[in-house]
Length: 214
Ligand code: TZP
Ligand code: MG
Image (cartoon, rainbow, N blue to C red; front, side, top):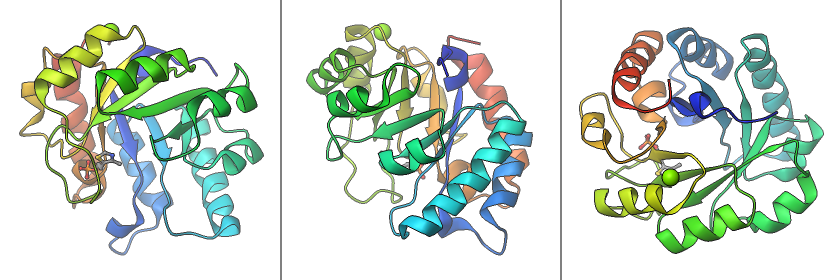
């Protein structure tokens, strides 16, 4: 699948720690109904077969709504289900090696927190960058932090689209407006909310006003 910049407007990343009585499938359906434009499955503590089952099931939901489905940091799962894409961090498999394996048809997302990492990721074949953490977050304990100035520099330095990530909420997202990002990527601002659908709708409406490609 080819990535459209518009797809990056509101990037929802799953996290089982917020399930709160619902299934991941139920939560995801709410987020998609609310307007998430792309979805990443992110499982850090799951065995292969459970990850595979969940990936298949969430992919089905995304497919039926025509939303790109990206697998975090697991090329075997991504390939086995023929996901729309894979996302790797700086500590994961090298972007160049991932691109060599997946070919041109799968989307490759790479995390970057400096201009150097961003330029290298673009050279290595990334289709988009996730840049953060732009705000402090308790969701990823070891996240690097990226200042607004650095975020702007990264957006200027690359020609691939950039999404900001890390601690983004409905209330703080406004300050990202002129950074050059195409959209925001969030976990808790969607999945930790009581009304996931409404929270996603609110983020989507604001994103449409703030960011470039819609
Ligand atoms: N990468 C950088 S920050 C982060 C990830 C996965 C966590 C984002 O979660 P939240 O809840 O939106 O801050
Ligand atoms: Mg740019």
